Amino acid sequence: MNKIFFIIIAGVIVVLSLWLVVYFHKKKEGFQKNEKKCVPFDQCSCQPSTSCPTGVACIPKSEATIRIPTVDKSVIDNCTTYKANQNVPWNDIAKDWVAGGGAPEDCPAALIVASGETSCTDEGCASVKGGLWQVTSPDAPPLSGCEDGDYNNCCNVDYVRNHFYIDKSSQIGCFGTFSNDYNGVPDIVPQDHSGRGLGGTQYNWIGPFCHAGAFTCVPEDEWCHSTTQSGIDGDNWGGGSQWKGEGRGNDQIFPFPYYYYAKFLESAGNDPKCKTAGVDADCYCQQPLSGITPDATLQKCLNENIVQPAIAKATDICKQALS
Image (cartoon, rainbow, N blue to C red; front, side, top):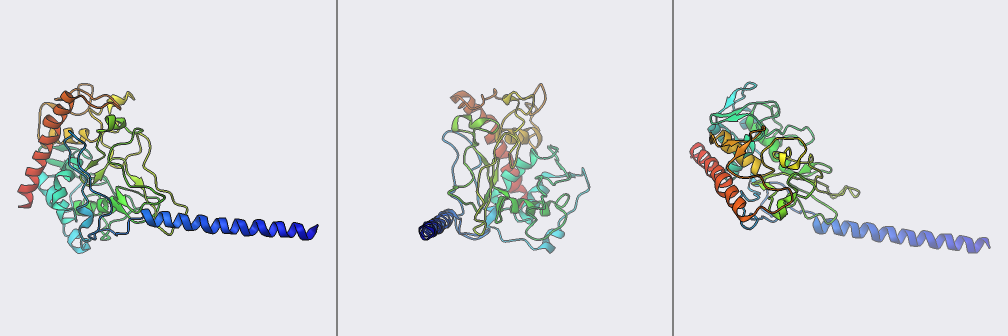
């Protein structure tokens, strides 16, 4: 009886051992299949580039900035360090973006996003704690090792770059190493975020800046699982999260990405027809409805009166600053 019992136990152990071997082998295979083999700033394609949703004006997702080699700390340290609340002219923001390692082609997106992250006017943006792009998390320190991500804009760009592409586990990135059959940060804002995807038309990107990011995983971390940020407050660059159209008592005029484009028109464009917050907020177009595809008239208004003029203005500033 005891002999039979031990034979059964031994058989169970063998079967369980084989199952574990197969499980971890398949898990590793799945990870390797979906793991992005490239590293930051090389020439391979970490994620497929995407275009704007049909009929929607936007700045398409860009990987240009994560291709730029790391800028030497001595170069970044030589950039201007501003005082708290000192105005930084738009031309200088554009120059600092490139000096800190941002791609010139991503300059318009950088200006547009900066306009929604700090206090800006047609003369520039205020230098504030957290930097112009509000990224100074020690979880993903700057690539160069620079210290002042708050008031040295070039250093803040370096922080931003290391939040675009993250090569460690359990950090939130727009690009990076993802696992468990996760295909990367979505093109359209998920339905549990502000705007709820606008019927599949709400683009999740302004150039290299994503709204809903994802949790990254490295191959060595077998138990890490990549997932998209969840919830209205779970955003990477979160302009538009406080959209009044969600009925939560907030007052931002539009959801992402339209909030940033309108904010840029209001500030850099000094457009008197754009006021992006408050009970009297207004900017050319009617409000979209959460989760609903804007009709042709509304989408045309968003494209032609907000998005395209903002892109044109930002592009002009970048061209003048970088020529």
